[in-house]
Image (cartoon, rainbow, N blue to C red; front, top):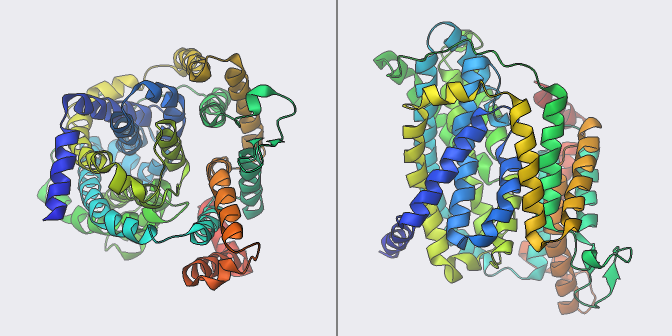
Length: 499
C-alpha cells in the first residue's frame, strides 16, 4: 500500500506541466546528442550544469536524467545508418545494425533498437522503484567507517572496470582525489594547495572542472578527428517488425535487460559495459550466431536493451548511497549538491517528491522516446548532415557563458580552459578521464568519513575492521583488486577491451 502511495506522489510530481516540459526537453536533447557523433551525455550534462542553478531541483534532475537515457536511444541511429556510433554504448550496435541497413532493413533495425530500449527502460525503472527504498534503509545504518569502506570499494571497482591500463586508471583516481583536497580544510580552517589564490579557498569549482575535462576537451578531440559524414540511407521505411523478427528478438531483449540491470548497479558499470557484455553473451548463446556481423537482428536487440537497462539502474547506487558509479552519475551528484541536496539514503525520506518524481518521469520519458525515435526518424537523418564546424563555435561560447555564470567570475572560465587542455593531454596519453571525475567527487566525502571514523575510534584505525560490514566491504575491495591484478584475468580483461 505504501508503494502505491509513493508512486502516486511521484506521478503527481512528474505530471506537473513544468516537469513534463523538462522531461521532454531532456529526452529530446538526449536523442539529438546521441544522434550527433562526437557529443555524448557526459559532455552535454557537464555543459548544462550552470543552467540548473535557476531550476527547481526535481525539474533539473528530471531533465538531466532524460538526457542520459535519451542518448542511449539516439546513439543507435547513427550506428545503424552510417556505421558511426553517436554514443559509446552503441558501438556494438553498429556491427549488425549497419549491415541490416545496407540490406534495406534500416527501418526494422531502428524499430528493434527503439522497442528493445523501451522495454528495458520500463523494466529497469520498475527495478529502481522496488530496489532503491530497501537499499536506502540498509544504508541508513551505515556509519563513517562503513561509508569510507564503501567508497574505497567504489573507487577500486571503477579502476577495475575502466578501459585501458589499470595503472593509468589508478593514477587518474589519485589525481582526482588530490584535486578534491584543494581549498579550505573544514576541520582546521587551513588553506590547502591554494597557492595564495583567493578563488581556490572554496576549492576547485566542480562545474568548471567537468565542463573542461568533458565538454571543451571533447570538442578538441572531435576537431582533431572530424571527417565528412556520408549517409547511405536517406529515407527509412518498414518500421513495423514482421512476426519472425518479433520472435527472434524476444529472448535477446529479455537477456539484455537482465544483464544490463545487474551491470548498471556496479560501480564503473553502466550503459557501455552492459551493451558490450550483452552482445558477447548473445553471440555465444544465440541459435543464429552464424549471422552475427552480417546483420543479425539479435545483435541489435540485446545490446540496445542492455545499455538502456544499465543506464537506468546506475541511478540505484547514486540515489540510495550517494555513490556515483560512472561519470554521468558523478555529474548528477554534482547537480544535487548544487541544489543543496545531500546525496545519499536520506534523499528518499527527506525529498520523497524528488525521488519518486524522478522514477515516474523515467517511465514517461521512455514513452516519449518511442514517439521521438520512430516517427521523427527523418528529422534525425537530416540532423546528421549538420557539419561539426558549425556546431563547435556555438558550443564553446555556450560553455564560456555557463562557466562565467556560476560565480560571475572569469576565474571559473580560466579553470575550465585549463582543464580542457589537461583533459586533452590526458586523452592523447590514453588516460581515461572518468576515474578522475569519480575521485574528484568522492575525495572530499572519503576524507570526511575517514576523519569522522578516526575521531570516533579515538585515532585507532582498527575501527575499519572491527565493524563487520566495513570489514566485508574492504575485503571485497581487496579481493577485486587482487583479481584484476592476476596475470590471467588482466590478460583476458585487456583482450576484452581491445575487442
